[in-house]
Image (cartoon, rainbow, N blue to C red):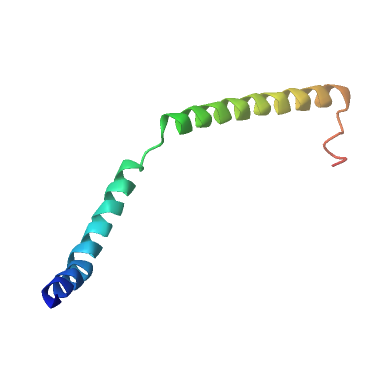
Length: 74
């Protein structure tokens, strides 16, 4: 009975921590990059940001043409 207890304690003290550390290192390495879904979302957000930037520049050109002093009022 005491041999089983000693083996269990040795497992918990020596083997289990190393096993847990290697498990999480493996998980971390497999999740280092972006997933396909993350890449699609990032590309979509990039496209939205570019469209918004184009809209802002267009609005600024319209305001510059129709109300030249609009920047001074801000």
